[in-house]
Structures are given as structure tokens and as C-alpha cells.
Length: 374
Image 1 (cartoon, rainbow, N blue to C red):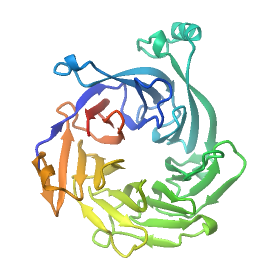
Image 2 (image 1 turned 180 degrees about the vertical axis):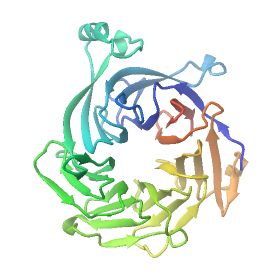
Image 3 (image 1 turned 90 degrees about the horizontal axis):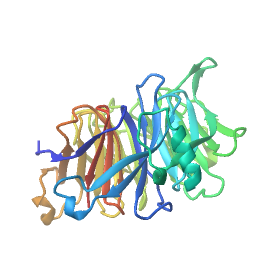
Image 4 (image 1 turned 60 degrees about the vertical axis):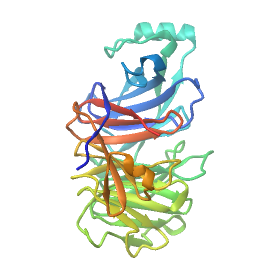
């Protein structure tokens, strides 16, 4: 096992289940915005908006390269199971209560901000007028349930590609349902009741007419949106057929390429044009892989996080000059591992902002983890 490269750990006021950067930074080009959500806090789960600012170069030897500050916070009904920004102000969350919440992140004008910070008493956090934002709930979609009186967790969601006007969302849940709906319309939904009876944990929408789901059965199921009552293809890893799947990610530059993370620590790349067997596979973690990211600019680079308390950086096409990094070459795949001495519990979520060159993660140690990363 390679030596762990260090992550900066900051207290985050709760077990973090999800972290997400805002997709556009139109508020202020000098700062980076991101959100975190908690889980396992009984009735006290929260959704939090942060800003991250670069620290002066003269202080880099003393403090981390970025300073993260809370700028808004709101109670969240249920565990935050998934989270997606649409632009920099619309934020969607999946809840363990079976619903999708839609929020608006608003920055106040100065006079309104002064009044708002005076009323900020729900959380013991120092707020500043120049940082005054509000997370405002807009609409809630109740989608997943085992019965009329028992909700099922909404575990994952995906946004239809290029649906910029009337946004269409795919949601999956522990009830095995795949639900397609529009953000602004609570009346019209397309429900596939038996998408996977074992329960679903993740969904991706790589093409406008193609949706892929993954879950406890270990199967990846491909649906044609033009005729989506039944999957048009089912595929799984023949080497680990009983290994349940926790997460999916589409390569934004190659929509036919997807990656899955499993309960046994495997990361597997698939080509949807040839589903007879995985394209590539590696084993960077000891157990559950919870989230995966394709590096947006560096082809062949994948990032992962796991229940084992580490973040993995996998280079599937390593060049000789990259071998100088601390890492292990395994089956022609270079694996680097990141961790923190202050974090020994699961890292549940990661996200990467290529403009800020900032990697963040959220953990069960109530840590917000971060590292500057090319």
C-alpha cells in the first residue's frame, strides 16, 4: 500500500454525506462556492453553503492554500443522499425520506444582509454581512415509497443532457423505482416500478435517450427513454457477480464510457457500445466505493472515495514521468492514495473544481477534507 498523501481536515458540524461545487461562479470570480449535506443526524440534518478563498501566497507555509467559510445553512428533511447544482444558484437534493428537494441559493443586498445576519440564531456560526446568503426551499417532489405509509430513500439522481429550459430529472430509490420528472412540474411523472427489485443506488443519464442504473443486484441496467418500461440491456462484472454497486459516473467527454464503484472496493470502466465485459478494472480500496469523478481535463484520471477513509487517484494511462509520484503501479494502472490522520472513518463524497484546482471530500468524522490538486 502506498504512503498516504495528506488531506487538510476541517470540522464541518455533522457527518457529511455529499459535497458539491457550484457549476458556475457568477457571484464573485474571486471565490468558489460549494455545498455540503449531512446524514445520520436524526432530525438535525443540514444543507450548508460554503465559500472557499485562496490564502495569500506568503502564508502558504503556515495555512492551507484555501480557506473555507460557511455562508448559509438550512435544515434538511432526512439524510442528504445525493446533491446536484444546476448553475450556481439552483440546488437539488435526494432525501432518505423519499423525495427530491429543490433549493435556490440567494445572495442578499447589503442592507438586507445586515437584517438577516441579526436574525441568524439557529446555528452557532459567525456570519459576516459581505458573506450573507440564504438557501431558500422552492419545491419538493415526493417520489419513492415502499407503501402508502412507508417512504423509501431517494438514493440518486441525474439530469437529462442539454435540458437547459424545462429541466428533466431521473431519480432512483431503495424501492427499485426509476422516476422521470420535470423540476417545475409536480403533476406529470413517468414511473418505472420494477427498474430493479433489489433496490437502486445510482443513476446516470449519458445521452438524451439513454439512462443507466446500478444497485444492490450488482447489475447495470440500460434504459431507452423512447421505450423505457423495461431495460434494453443488463450487464455485470462476471468476475464479481454478487458485488453490489454504489455509484456511477459518465465521462463527460466520452458519453459511451461509464465507471462504477462496488461494495468490495473495485472501480470498473465500461463501454456502453460493448457490454460483454468491463473495459478496465482496478481495486484501489478495501471496501465500499461511494463516489467517482472523471478528471475534467486529464484523460485517464479517475478519483474515488471509500468507506476505508481514503481518496484514490487512478491513472489508467500512466506516462513514465508520472511514476515519480507516490503511488503503486498495479495492472498498468497508477494508484495514489490520499488521507488524513484526523480522519479514520468513511469518506462518503468528493468533488473537484478544475478552475480552483481544489479537491474536497466529506466524511463520517464530521470533516470537510480538501487538497490543492492539478
